[in-house]
Amino acid sequence: MSVAVREPKRSSWAGGYSPFKVEYGKLMMWFFLLSDSFTFGALLISYLTTRFATMGWPDPNKVFNKYPLGGESNSPLVFVSIMTFILIISSVTMVLAVQSGKEMNKKAVMKYLLLTIIGGLLFLSCQAWEWTHLYREGAWWGRNPFPNFDGSLSSPNFTNFFFTITGFHGFHVFSGVIINIVMLIMTACNTFEKRGHYLMIEKAGLYWHFVDLVWVFVFTLFYLV
Amino acid sequence: MTDLHELESGGHTHAHAFDSRAVRKEIWRITIFLSILTIVELVLGFTMMNWPEESTKRHLVKGIILILMFWKAYYIIGFFMHLKHEIRNMIMVIGLPATLFVWFVIAFVSDGNSFKNLREKYDPYKIELSHLPMPVKEEGDKTHEIKPAQEKPTTPQQQ
Image (cartoon, rainbow over all chains, first blue to last red; front, side, top):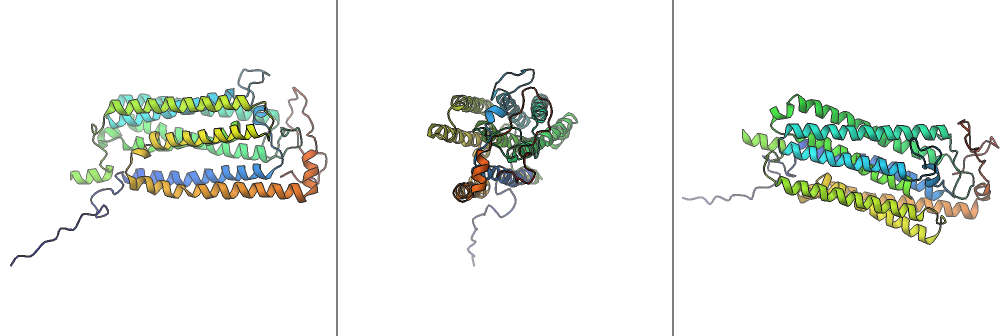
């Protein structure tokens, strides 16, 4: 007697491999970034809501118009565009580090990670300068010396949101730099060579790109429009 | 067990399962796109700088800048974060929850806008406040003791 054996079609969820074709840690990093994007989204959207609900708002071109060693010159958008390009370039070096990791090229990984860390530190220094400058101008949480577009009395909401959101973003950059330094040390100690893959760099890279992504929004919403 | 190793890494450990030159080419292509978009944003920002606030053309340019912002976000998420090259299920798992932002932005921004319209109509105090001139800070004044609403201690901050 013969029994017909039906081979059921193997489901993606039958086990044995990842249904999303990514490793567990990377999937979890994506979920973390999704939740983090809602945290930043909540901050940025509350800023937009307040701005839409307010009659008059300070002109960003009159607030952010200085750069280091620029003296009293009026140069809006100059310094922030430098900061933006620093972050874009550091994002590129991070992709290159991830790609070198896939190629198992330890030397290149270390080179690009180091460049990314330098980019992150440069960005943080720029932000520290800008905060110091604004503080000297009289801006801080609860204090807004900048009048509205039409010269009327402005509310401290402007500085509150600016310092909270750029501060939260700067904190992310700072943690990204720390993570990248840890990655650099782990690479130098051959941790990934022994493990056989550099997937950890990819996760750190996702976080770093997310920081760059948030800056795209912060840059546009605070400095440009 | 090689299977276990594959499982841990999601099957992405093969060092030569991709064309390294093509990947690098794509990275530089996206870098150039991002730089061009940023430069266009900055040019638009400089262009509209001296246009009157609340004018239609300024709102139009701001709209264009916001579209460019999402375009840049797409490049970063899709290519730098590699999401575009993941499988469809993975893209959906991240993309579908993110569509909540559509509601999030529209609901809250329109709420803020309606709040402003109501104030402009029915709140004489806010209207008066919006015409009060800001005390001008003297040039070269290094103190940071400036408080916007210091003339009346009871004045609530303008919302």
